[in-house]
Every structure is written in structure tokens, then in C-alpha cells.
Image (cartoon, rainbow, N blue to C red):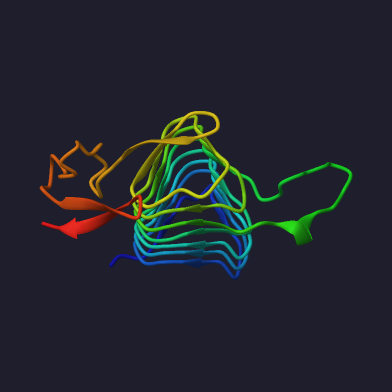
Length: 188
């Protein structure tokens, strides 16, 4: 895979690790200790905090800040201007860096434009968070979450399609089933 591409206006601090083929675009800032996986794209005006781990082949669109405590597994999509938080009860006059709550976004999940992810949650594999949604609790694998606060509106396939009652992806033919109230992949 190719060397990483870092735009001349981007700042990548010493100690940051940028994987092969990754691209870091205009005015982005990657702090020391951050790790960005191979083939990941960091859009314009993004901020990647200290010691953040971002997996391979992620897409972080413009104006996204990935703060300390957030982990993105492989192939996560972060839509334009979506927001991660890292403290439940911030105050400008009280230092709470020791109270950061970890947030995990699992493989293949999508977070829509302008969505907000309140810290301390886990977003399951291939889940889809709708544009503008506010996520305040854990999200199951394959869940489509909409609204404020976000609630599960449907199930989606790995390809990102809302599943019909047959639980068969209309694009790929992959099959799913419900186990203990949760959607699981059942194969082709």
C-alpha cells in the first residue's frame, strides 16, 4: 500500500502514527500518540486527540473531532460535523480530564452528519446513526438509530440497507435472524 498522504496545511505531531495509504486533509490536526489505520481518510478541519485509536479504512468527514477516550474500529464512517463528547457534566471552571468516559464505535458502523454521540456508549457493528440523532445509550449491532434521543427505528444490513420483514438484504442477499431480541448475521 502507498505511503500516507498528509496535506501541507495539516499538522501531524511527532509521535502520531499514520498508516499506509491513509490521507490527512486540509487543516487537520493529529496529536501525539494518536494512531490512524491504513487507508483511513481524515477530512478537512478534523482534530484527532492524543492517544486516540482509529482503525483501518475509516472515513472521517470534514469538521469532526475525535477526542481522547474514543476508539473507532475498522471501516467506521463519521459524517460531516458529527460530534463526540468525552465528559458527562462539563463545566468550564472545573477540570474533568480524569473523568473522560470511553466511547467505542465498532467495525463498519456509520454515524450520520451532525449526529451527537454522548460519551460512555458503545455503537455496535454495522449500526447506522441517522443524521442529527443524539445517541445517549448503547446501540446494538445492525440497529438504525433515529431521533433525539436516538431510538431504534429498524435493522440494517452490513451493506447499509433497511431490512424488510424477511431479514434478507435487498442488495447482497445476506440473511439475518433475530436472537434474544437482537439482529445477528446468518450468512448467505
